[in-house]
Length: 186
Image (cartoon, rainbow, N blue to C red; front, side, top):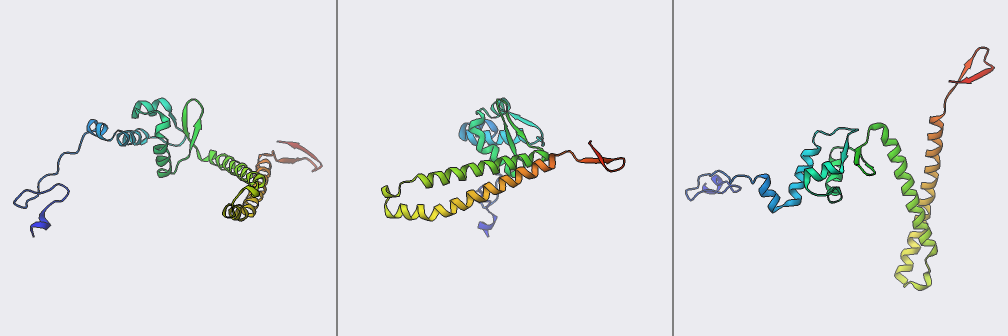
């Protein structure tokens, strides 16, 4: 019965009565013991009221956390995923939280980047001199070669289709005026 009454997180006295847990450390104490954790907490509180379209400047991150933005990249990415946002790098300024209209461009750019990486992987597979490899490495290259080639071809086709679709969606529609024979752009 005494064991059930003990508060294991805060401990208990010798009579088995619950005692108040120790005070939580304040921010200064956390900073001295776990500086990176305190900086991440400071970053989360700094970003709490940010909405889509806002800019997160490098100076803002550095002033709020005490660390340069490069050291806080992982915490920024974790926050980005938890809030379902997309951070777009702004050269010389920091990051901007993407608006919904920006997401199509972000997807297009990441697809093109993926295509370039697949083409580079295919190029590396093609230039590899198999005579200088041992049997296990040759098997790996032979296993990967057709898969990399298919992936590169698929991505290349997808990027071409995406470019075509974007061009079609950006065209200005024609409007028929008068007797139907003459057209002019809107």
